[in-house]
Length: 288
Image (cartoon, rainbow, N blue to C red; front, side, top):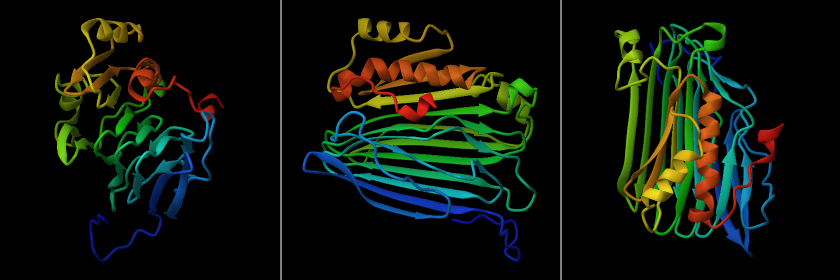
């Protein structure tokens, strides 16, 4: 969907990019059998550092940033028994918006069929001062499928003393299991009284980075001892996991996107063997 200030104007500098991926298990191997893309958004090939049953994919966006009028749409479909881990080679930067056609939007839909699993690990999103952002993620689980994912946002460039003091941010994250919503969360910061919203107890509390981690569904709830061990893996008071229904939900609120990613990675290392029956295998691109 295009968002315009005026229907008489066209912003030719805006990128409208889309990516459709379908993965299926064929002869005990998870294969990327469909990859359709429009614009500068694609994957090159699947990697198999854990064996052929689980594919690692790197989502590439060559421009490296999102400007006014850009709309990125990502659709991933995991067919029965397919298993994949998808990540990005670097942070996503959402730059200051222009007055004309300001909205910068990303829509992600992840459909996970019975017996399949998807690990969705985009690196952090950096929201520049003056950006006008809409981020929508929808996860659709079916049957005994599993999902692990995170979303990390950094507001402004704190190290350069460039804080997020103007602009807007709308984030929606929804998880459905067999068509029933099991996790729904949103964060909305708009132009009206922005400073008070950022410092509010229901939003960022004056911090510059926030992170959300999700893993599940688990067949059985984790015990209190399990949860205590999970809390002890992060060694930071800014990060805290809890249980919401059959999911483990981890949250970070602090001043470091790197710390948010480290906390999420620790939770993934601890939970992956229990949820997916595999030890954690960090993608090689994280070390380059």
